[in-house]
Image (cartoon, rainbow, N blue to C red):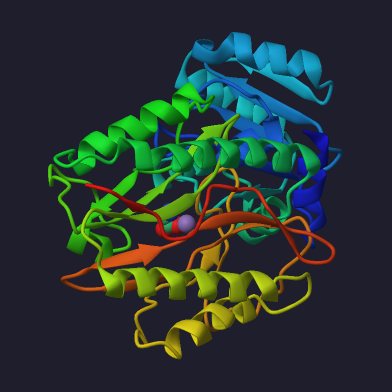
Length: 369
Ligand code: GLY
Ligand code: MN
């Protein structure tokens, strides 16, 4: 994708003679490979993309994805695909394609050390340039096609968010609910989940990155479900919190406070403001409530080709928001031993504010036991 390659180069000064993005084995895949190539399907383990300052791209594909690669190249005249069978063929071709380039940009943030050592032997003259920051800055501002994919990924998450109350039955385990949610995401059009689905019952909800277990749902439990869909490689991220059975007045008030904190954070969003302002708006609401100090993480991050797309904001983040960013807004209150509430939405930053991509209801929902 010429436009994406040019965007990365625009953020580089001086400009390297070539950029080299390489995948190891899953999950050590640099999503920037797909960002510059634009191929919608295929894993591409061991594949390499060499991007040139004129926007053209050479892709070294394994035979396992050759069809997808050739099809994508047919649709993009700036891409040339070379199907390679073995590691030494890759090395010979990299040497040939990089040619006399003296400075070569690589993605320190994602390239494995093993691959770097191999490329350093293949291209002994190369001066290596870390392009991680340019990649991050290019990827964080989405174009219309990326926003369309993120919107669809968010719609899939929202559809499941609306269905969760109908799945809550006494005795269902966290793992069973997570499995049902993931099944439904695929059923709604996802090709997979964007991260390990979090389902947390009762006290488990107090841990933001909890992993589901065989714990079973019982009356009086609060429930935190944090999940996301992949649609044409783009990841959504949504959290909804519910309550099951016997009312818990504290958790209901906690929910209302988190909702207000999210509304305050959303109201702060506009291009140009330091992103910490969004975090601080949510934190102020929580810190004026009886649950002061119980927001224990930054209020959001960019989403894109991965769920944590290289950029996040918190109380000290000075980076400004920019039009075209797609970010999460996810305040939470966590009460150890009792439970938690988090509400997370995906929004695109627009000229005048923001637009929701996720749409499932956010308010307190109590499901009878
Ligand atoms: N959805 C998990 C997280 O943002 O950390
Ligand atoms: Mn998130």
